[in-house]
Image (cartoon, rainbow, N blue to C red; front, side, top):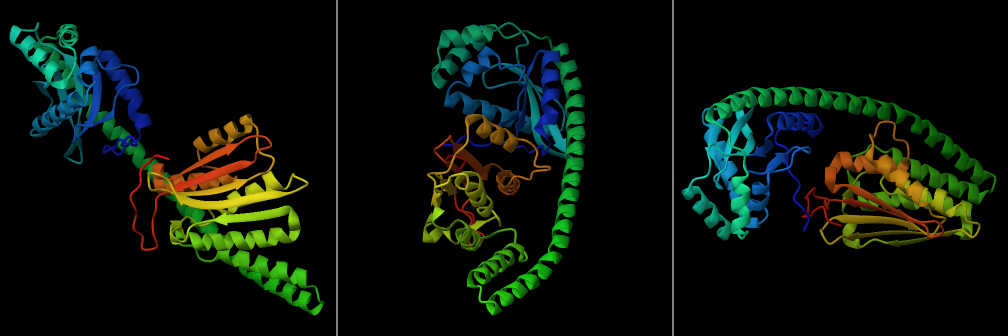
Length: 408
């Protein structure tokens, strides 16, 4: 099963909060966790790992569930008056719970510890031994780890809680402000791109008229092949420049690919072979426009064209074991070396600004539209061709999203 992706109810960039959490954890020598209302960890320091006691408790499913339930209870208690609370967790360790509020509403907490306020009592040690048996860990090992927890007095606990209360909410407010500004900049970029796209659509109308004129001349001059190519090019452009919906049926994208390949068949003749295997039920799946055509063009230009004998492009579709749609474009062309493949994969992880490559453009558009559920993989080796697989959630023509996960 795929690991459940952690949510981020703070709605702020992790890259902004992460260094702050690391710095606070190092300064106070505490293990800090941003925890959501369900008791799930949103963010923990990279620089400081949980104490051995917590690692042992959380090493079993039963222990983890108790930790989550205990964290939920702590958030309920501190959200009542929106102030830091000092309490025992389910495993007898002391903790500081600082509520995190956005627009006056508690959305989680900063939970830190794990410490003790005094040396363990016999009753606490008996409770730890009982806990070890119930969650399935070694009792002696858990007791030793509990006795290693640092001892803090009540005054230190109080002062630390007040400082964390002030710092954490301040940091969250700053991060939210930065995130809002970044979203505003992204929206401005999107609107500018849409305006440029609208302006670019004016030109095709003149192009269509010119192509129709060429087709008529070819008919008059008895040049059937020229007329055929011109008509196919006009059809391809019509499919490409028609007013675009955010998503289109896969069948429509394949129609565009067919028009493109029909033109290329005139050029390549018997050197180019096409094989398609897309199940009928997938033709209604909604995808982003111009998803497959750039991948097919890459396969033709970079894979097949350099081969004197030509080659084959396979286009296929299926559902993977997690229920996502998988669309594949594969060729038996020249392929790519390992360094080239790695360079493309690195480019996929970088910013989409300035992206001109067809493959990278497709990848970034799917990431923007579907987040982690949209993905693209690349496999290639010299002399063995290239395969690009595009993964996306199963959305039918009615807009219904079918079940899927991140596995493939």
